[in-house]
Image 1: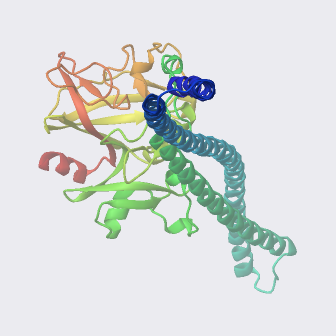
Image 2 (image 1 turned 180 degrees about the vertical axis):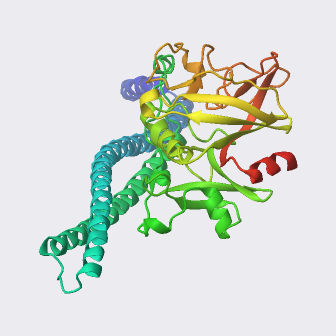
Image 3 (image 1 turned 180 degrees about the horizontal axis):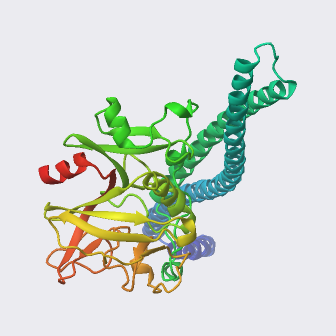
Length: 461
């Protein structure tokens, strides 16, 4: 730009000097050679100005080209930043949509669960009424049979006919309700699997709670798996009372079976076959995949999966053991793959006694850790038995506690041991009365009626 301005200043001067020379040549006669040399100087000056102008234009073009390249680079960076922002915006929208869907499914799950509980209570009342009516019908039938034998000509009384009709109607109603309950449980299982899938998606997106929320006490999950309570549309009179009956009938392989104990509802159990007998598995832990810091209600009715980690449920355990005298067997495996077991004769109370447990050791290859000849009441984080010690969350999980927090809680937090560190006193531990502490990797709690087969099993193992 500076060169252009200089050229614009030089050109008028050259022109004006040329005009002056021409006018002076008219006034005075000058020699011809001098005028020719003056013109050549003007041409050189003009050529030099044009050359400088060309160099200036060339520099200007180069500078302009560099500025344009810089602008294009900045535009490319802006486009990439805008594209990244659009991707992040889409991810945020998807995450918000997943959260809304999860909340809706949880609300629906609670509604269906409440409906199922209502249906269960109605079915239980109907079953009780059915049992009473069946007893009355049998009594009336016996009386009728005696009357018929004594007086064959007497016809059936109209009240008996109407009563039989009523009982048949009740049977049909109960069958319909059982089918409805089965359908409700199927829907609950579908809802539960959907919620699990969405939770997994949220974890994969990297969503985590803030540090402030992480420092607060954790509220445990309260949504148990309903596979344990699934009812079957079968004839109750043909359903066995426990795994021992199933084994004696000829089913001698470990697996999931349906039982009905003490006139309770039909429910599924896992039968563990060992050396010529079958044990009912009431608790199993292998890898920490199931949260055991559950509520009192869930410990009453059970949670988890029978083919993985689970707790059968205090009500189901009580319905089984009140039929006869049972043995409690506890199997443990530590992190060095050493296996231990211990067996107790025991008595279990009902709901009103907080499922009080009374133990007497029979046999085993590990020192006893549970108090004998004492009433141990079952407690959870939301249901503390009278006189129970308030333990911190690190000792979570429902258990029969006495006066020490969680040293022998097989339902505690599942923790893998750290290298070169002594076993922790929290989580799954077995602390014997002589002070030795066992850090446990897997546990099984099994029950079996007291008979000769169970004692032979103990000797064999």
